[in-house]
Amino acid sequence: MSLKSIELQIAIPKTFDAGKLTEQKNQQSALNHQQAAAQTDQQVAKQRTTVLNSSASERTHNNKKSHDEGQTNDNERQDSSQQKKDIHASHPYKGGFVDYTG
Image (tube, rainbow, N blue to C red):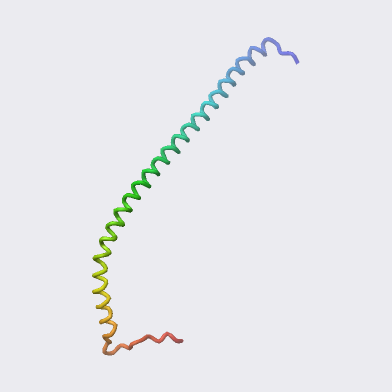
């Protein structure tokens, strides 16, 4: 199976084209890998800042909550004393309990 000079004239340029295509595909895959790594790094950095921001807001939320709890405890005490008064007050024509037996 010998190659004639005409066949070589066609085969050699095609091998160069195939080599160029292979090199371009390799470069494209390397570029895609670099872009994916850069995007992952950006996402990690964004998540870190989000966690830092949320932890800071959580601290301020906890401070506000503890401050508000002092005020709500007083309100709850007043509400609970009002509820105790309401429990002891009976309605003139409604019963005191509901019978759920069948």
